[in-house]
Image 1: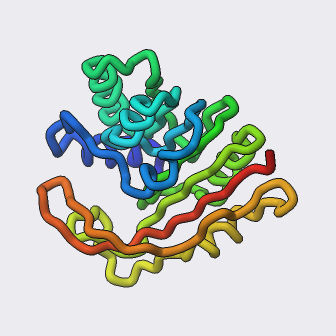
Image 2: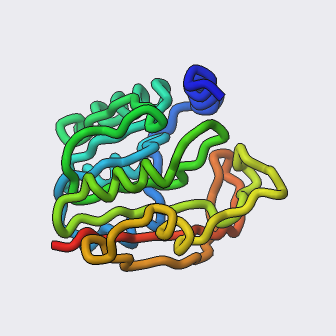
Length: 208
């Protein structure tokens, strides 16, 4: 499927729902990052911007990336309205084509799933290489489908965190897996519905 189709698909996803006035951060982000010293963070697939705004409030300098111009435009406006535009930089970027430049203390990839062509292993490998020494890569994937998910394919298989780590294929002397598990939680969808879901959580640290 073409990049143009991917852009249109994700623009339509975001345009079909009202802009979030106060988007919330992902639970796996807050539990992982709260005790880390703030630095530079790359948010891959920033979506509504809950993670980016929360990170900025914690003192991080955020580069927030999404393929959807609707998503990054809304996040830029939100950052300005909350007085965080000096800490949040938004960029429309197609990870299927290239990876954002720079070095980071943290790279986050929450639910980086798409029905379009995307070599996730290459993207996540690039993310690991973008880490500064001591930096961390946090990958949170769906381990189950919520009722409000765009993907309701009953035959879909969700790779485990260990499988994702193996696919990235990083040298163990340079990168260490600090966490690889599948916790469950109660999630709230865009329409207010709740459901129990499984997250696949992978945390990788670059050797200091």
